[in-house]
Length: 220
Image (cartoon, rainbow, N blue to C red; front, side, top):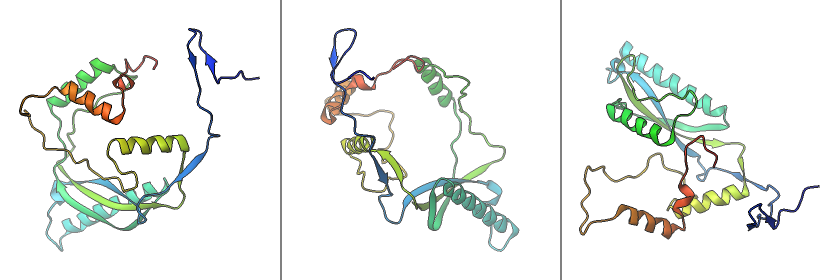
């Protein structure tokens, strides 16, 4: 027989109350937009195939590379329950990210703060075997069967989205609208970043202590 947990008394004498179980109710999740959710993929194309003239073997090789990548992308998502809708859009070329000493410095600091787990290795170099450019593919995908999630998790994520000004009833964006990066930010009269952060948390009903954690190998 399972002992009652509402209310329960811990060994320290502190009393707590456990929320009433919701019988593990689940709700279905569909894409907010009827035409499907917008996804983005990356196609890596050798530099020699970029900006090729029409009616050449190089252009035919470029078209074949793009088509095969789109087909693999659609098949990969189909295996996970997503079905492509319409014709994908392909834009580019763009310069791929490059490794720098800043990446190594950031990883070293992260390792010193949270430690290293198992045999995980950092990726601080983006050098490729040959020079390539990136083409970005965008397409919408729908589901024939919904994804199910616990009601509590759904309500919590919805509350979290609204707290941070994200509309949970609209298609999520592919990028974040961030201000232009600056080395120095001048504010008239000065500003205390810690005070600003605390005021922002209080406005959303958050506590800083809830987001603090120790080393990754330490129990929560």
